Length: 494
Image (tube, rainbow, N blue to C red; front, side, top):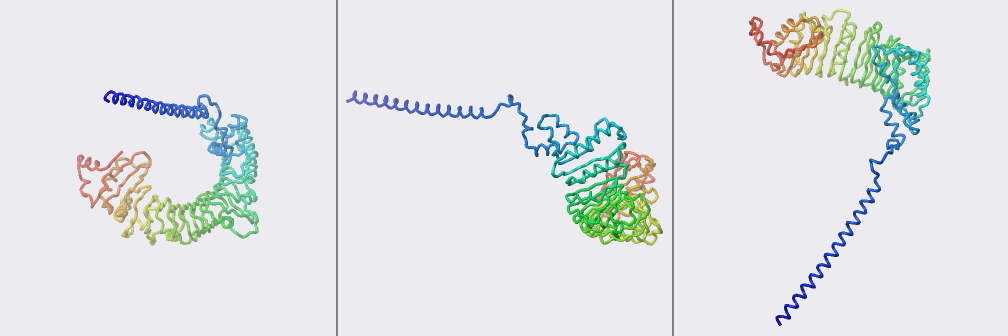
């Protein structure tokens, strides 16, 4: 019984070991099969992906034409056309570019002080521009920009503008410096897709009937606007603006033949007028949504509607004192005011200027200070609370300037920066004296920082002791050298 039992147990173990070996063998076969399958799949995937070392294919050239044109539109047109020599496919890609920029010149010309074309250079440029304008087949040109230089021919500029008139353009910038080229009426008629128009040195003739439904920005520099129909009893500017329903920005710089400037539009938000090349003019401004205004003009008559939406104003005008006050009343809601140069006819002794309750930034030139808030030094300043946060004083008056600074320091509790620009001839000793006097002034704002900049040098003196809770000791003027150095240590003088 014992031997028989041991024999059965041994047979059972051998049979179990044999079965276990079979199972392990099957599992191993499956793993090997799965490994071979994965290896085969990996090899097939690697075969599908070409080796980068052996791949010499030009992938950029395989891009769609519209993508290539988009890439080339970021280059100057001269560089974009040069890609035509790369291959046969690139030969005519440039003819569909939606951006044409003819302002890029060879480095040999831009290194000169004044850009002047000789005959050979001009002929090459003219032939190049003729070819590009005539061969361009883009259905819509987003932007076209060109400038003229000494050596150009006015008749060629006119011909280019006629070709441009037939193109569908979104933004057009043409600067004919030192020229006066007349543009016929049909140029405006064909520009219903125009969004931005900037012209310099062009006379624009307006037809009796036209429409610019998409024009948002218009700039005319050293040019003029006129009506084709002389019998049309309408101001050219009013006629033009009436045909631009969405115009938001208008820039008029040194234009001719403007006796009366009429700007009437409910869409205009930015208005810049600089007419410094002629006597005084009459102006009419009716722009209820105006946000930014920059006027540099002599005014003999004016009518300005309330500008309650105004945010920024810059004035450089010469007119009568009464008209000046009326103009300030119309812009009294502005937050930023720059008074550059103000010239008035008549006395300002009885002027009372409006309060600017929303004003946070004030920049005033030397000629404008005497009429700000009060007349220096005959009248006592009016004590009011000013919401100013930043002031710039240009052309500091050594005699009366301290009173000006004192007035604003005492009445501006929110003031953070007061920058003073002194005259070029001011020596360093006088500048130190001015700074010492400024330190004595009481400031309503404990955060105000005063900086003095000499316009004739790079030197700048800065009051680093920005917290002033009362007047500084008035006996500081009588201090000796040691005390003087201690007082100067309060200022960061560079």
